Image (tube, rainbow, N blue to C red; front, side, top):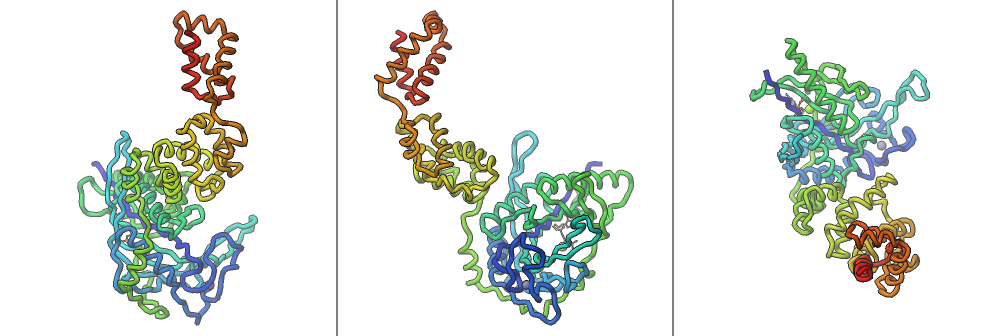
Length: 483
Ligand code: ADP
Ligand code: MG
Ligand code: ZN
């Protein structure tokens, strides 16, 4: 029997608000344990949560970015469970009146044969909730666990997909696209290592062609998109094997182990009624007005897909180039600012940014936003200087290396280092004469018909002019003098 996989993802995104969701404590990663806490986020009895307006605003922007419908009224509920990182013994979340429903994420999925296909993945809902604290295990090798409540009360949105993903690759592309959108709209940095984006994967299988859903397992504990893909791959295989062995799939939560690339059962899955959800009496329901939605919509920047389409038309770039350039909003903006400074070479500037600039960023391990010594307009200036024949493309690399360290404009670097291309025929003629005199054997070969020798002689002249000879002038003079 042939099986197909069904996958639904639950993605938690930490919102990058200045303060927490229900108190004024700072919302920042990396501070010493328990330094960003107060009675509210420590879960003392008798304190009152107050909703941070910025959380609602960012959550609405996220909803609009995936074309979701925002509810006219939304409410917080208490979700009860016990865990040492949750002192209140309930999480303030949303249950049956989530902020929004029915969104869509458009993905492009590569096939093994190099082609690709497009697909819309439905988003069931987005709701707001608070994060829990964090347990620190085995610090200094001691057999104890500590509780750090800095993370408690960090605002989260949970984005729940429809069970419409059919392969580990589709899940991977969905996550990549979702992350890109959340970064573009600046609601989160989506840094999976720091936990600002977390993903649980629900996986089931069913006989191919069947329309009913099979029993799912929920996989947790993946800390990169690659691991999500591997965990799903493994889980599908595990379930198929189990069914083929005549076993029943049980609904459960499984933990992914990246070292062994396996999943193991953690607990049988709890049902909604286990959590004893009820409306949080401390927070009144939120009415969402048209004005509030309009204000959130006004914060939407151009989104990745729209940007890709516009840039393709405006600059005549390939889909592959566009994909690299729009990977982050900052990189796309850098590119467009460089082209705005010199509109004649959109393709060459794209290549320069993808190759030279990216190589430098990778080398230094910095994002484009930290690349401050070369503002985009300097890249535009560099290409104007190449087109004007002031420097060659080869010298441009040296100029660029200097621009990175000095922060100077390219023309200043060229001036300071004396890198101006030599087009002066007299100087080049002298160099050509000398090269012909010094390389009698090669000249003879060329005259006997060996065209390759010409290239060697050009190289020698370029060397003699320290790479600054205008290649076209060098070529012309050399041909003329060789007769
Ligand atoms: P639960 O109540 O167990 O949390 P939900 O209905 O809220 O289940 O769905 C949680 C996630 O699991 C969603 O992303 C949904 O698309 C996905 N999901 C639901 N049923 C299945 C299934 N049979 N196979 C795979 N994914 C599923
Ligand atoms: Mg659920
Ligand atoms: Zn607090």
